[in-house]
Length: 69
Image: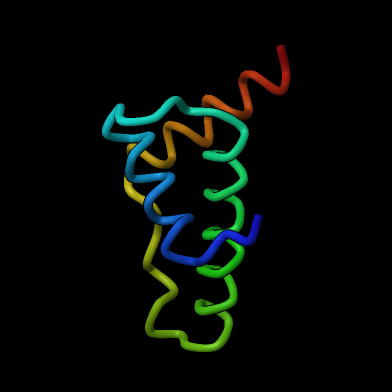
């Protein structure tokens, strides 16, 4: 299945809101969005200070902890 950019935003948003389970697709979407953000940062220095919300960062930390376990 082809996932659009909007789908990645929706997957992460819905996971944060508790409307869907936080699963591998959530972490995949976060990683894709992180890559896109990094590309934008490289192209436009105006966006260097843009980062994910603390809630998304907490999900990333959760993924790291699960990977280590």
